[in-house]
Length: 283
Ligand SMILES: [Cu+2]
Image (cartoon, rainbow, N blue to C red):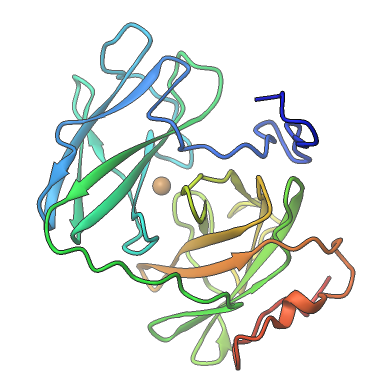
């Protein structure tokens, strides 16, 4: 893969131990660990889905290091990027995981985000599943800096940069008022999953600060460091908890080539009518 003339690689991301901009989740098997579904053909609707992660010895792994309070974070998303679900399966002592999913017909991608105890670091494995029925694919939602779920509005500020770490800030309000009492959910005020449109490559996103660290406020802002592996379009899914309920908002984002701190540039008003883009505020 290094013999493409002129192809620039940025293996050493600017941020943290996992810093590489290389996306995860594109492989069903990596470093000897493999994600195995009991069935890759599923019926539509709510149902339990069972799977395991096998290790280099071929056996189901039963020793994991918890990350954000869970041994395994499971993401399900249809290939058209709809239907996002971030859930936490339960494992039995033999290493079989089960989780309740609600699936519409179509092609799905499932991700398992794990840190096997015998492995040096985290892995994101991905696998396809086919859900029977009439598939009605949805067009990609337009790029926008504002998203809504119920009475909540979330504004996205910051640029997603190819090959470079940058800060994304999500500001939560309800009925027009900033929310300042977000609840910790899995040791953070928010969990952000970012997927590349086209192959659903899974980005490494790190929350900035944690509840109880003496510096991180419970809203209205939630900050993350993210690296886009390449220029392109990405889908962002934020889970946050307030009033005892976890909610998810979704964004479609295009990478920027503008240096942080410079003017937002022409992409900030890319002609999607009245959408507010949130790129105008810089810190
Ligand atoms: Cu999780």
